[in-house]
Length: 113
Length: 114
Image (cartoon, rainbow over all chains, first blue to last red):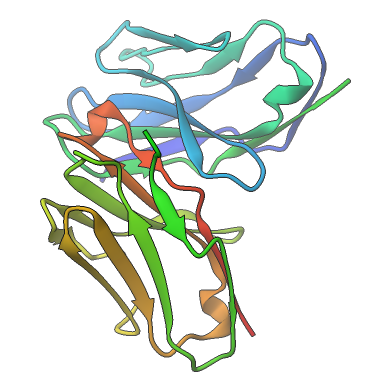
């Protein structure tokens, strides 16, 4: 079945450092790919998405590119802030309008001032 | 838009008691999802509805769990009887059309069963 693998955390960075959180997936065809963010005590929020190969999703300085050849969707940000401290989840929806999201286990990011 | 509204935000109950969690999806969304989040198992999909009809309940852990969606603006997740291992954060999410448009999550209900 479909699955998502994220790099294990926690990840601790200093403010203004470069961030990469790796995400790879297993799915047939062309799934849609997502990054969600969960701030402490809150629900998940959609951060960005990409629905076809080579698409780049971006939001709030975060970016991720849908790489079909490497089945990857790595999350990057050039300069993190303390306010980016959260748990980040990579997820996919199977091709064809499936309704079920498949989530990775999440990566906790802590940014220190 | 008020977003997905869940109640209560926190629930503490004694083992053996019935617990009912409530969710109001975003108006116009036709799919609704119940998730459970724990440190050990991460985020698990319990059940989802489309147009008020349960489509996949394979994630419901056992018969003690049941979910209903009597109309497009309300859903409940019930646990009867509750057990300490049910302690978790339960999230409701909704979307329109299909999930390639993203799921919109509520703030969750933190359930503690003592």
